[in-house]
Length: 157
Image (cartoon, rainbow, N blue to C red; front, side, top):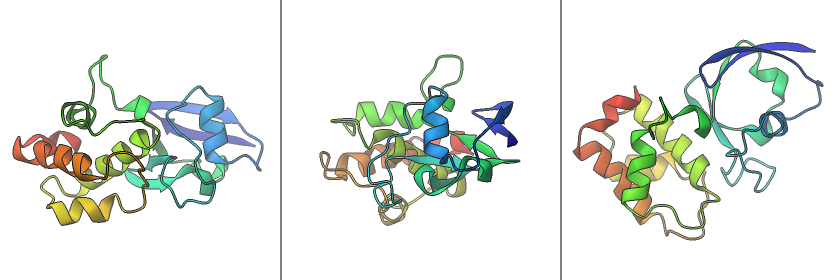
């Protein structure tokens, strides 16, 4: 089955098996930031943006991305520069083992696209579908609040 999508900012055409999940398709394209944790959409490790909204890639088939825009962590860098969220995560020690980090960053990106000035409560709600066993979530929320304080949330629009 042939599909067309915008993948990390580039128009792309692919021939896909109708039974392949989006996570498997993306990883086969070398986009290994998309991690498989639970395979059921419960842990958030495979979170990507579909038309700017956070979705779990393990619960979608690749063909469902036809005609849509998919963004993975690899698509956030511009001209080799880290995205504001990636920088804030590093500066606030919101990255420990790193397994949940790509999905967490994508969930935050979706939040900041909708609301460049979220409260701590808004942040906790936005990341509630992403499990992290290392950070305790506080450094992640602190990183996003730093973005808000610096007014950099508008960069995510």
